Length: 415
Image (tube, rainbow, N blue to C red; front, side, top):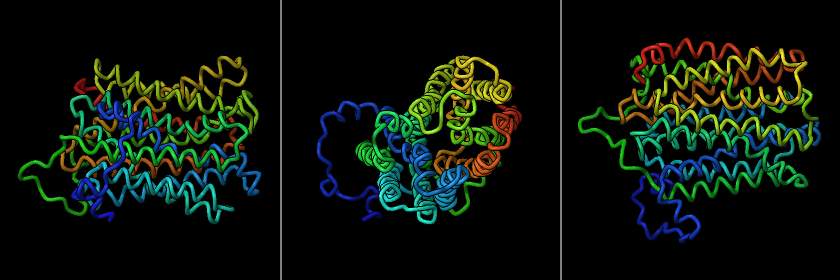
């Protein structure tokens, strides 16, 4: 059954979905469908982090164990993207089918965590499985965007990553809205949203672009490595790798940074609200960056965002005596800048690749980037008790090295 679903050859009557009137108008805008599905699907990513305080109390674990749960998702994502990339699966089957199947499976594993996990021994494998499934959601969502609107990939991917950012923040928002709910209930909301994402993308299907070229080399194991022979792909990828050192560690540490700043107490509603705002404002950064990229190019937007987030990293440890308003403004600026560059690395990489390996190349780039996040998350969660606000300086090398890696593109004024 899964093979037929991936192949796209199953008769329409066998999987005919009921007409859902509220969804019908949305389906007329493919990019809107994809970005909404990305919002819902990626809410699985940090669903456990929103319950961190409850898990610490219920299971008798320490804050570093929350980093372990986050890294389990990252490791699952890395393994999944490597399999998709090196095998060519990301380009062998319709991206919409892969997305839908992975969103359903991710929802099930997330639900199993909420209902069945009783400690780290059972929690870590389930979070790994969620991460593995997300490998079929995030990179394939990017491929879907390019397959529908390749001529405005930078701006469209900015919308997509904006929704990924909101999806990352969404569990904190659910936690804030359902203050009286148990932590399993808030996680089950994320699972329900992921199931809706699967329906949306299955109904949409793939776009008309990114078809294989006549005479293109056959898809074979490891062909994705050839992407790194392309100078523009290398520059975009190296910029992305520096960016990733900072991004997910910042999202993981954001609640702790807010507490250390004296802006909220652990486990409080203000902490949930500020965490949602600091992470979620990245969506606005993405959308503004997408608009600006149509005027100055993706490479310039990416470089500007890297420079801005580097400045925030440098300033945060020095903000201890600032007013609460100034600290919030700094954190919001950091949250907006830290992810505003992300869609443009993907757009630059997709533009540099032959169309028949775009899915595999983006998945492979993601796998390396997320491997980098595991180290920064591990060090950040382990050292924050000693470094306190100075932990921001641990993240600073990422955007600085990203600027250096991206230099051939932003200096050339051609992207």
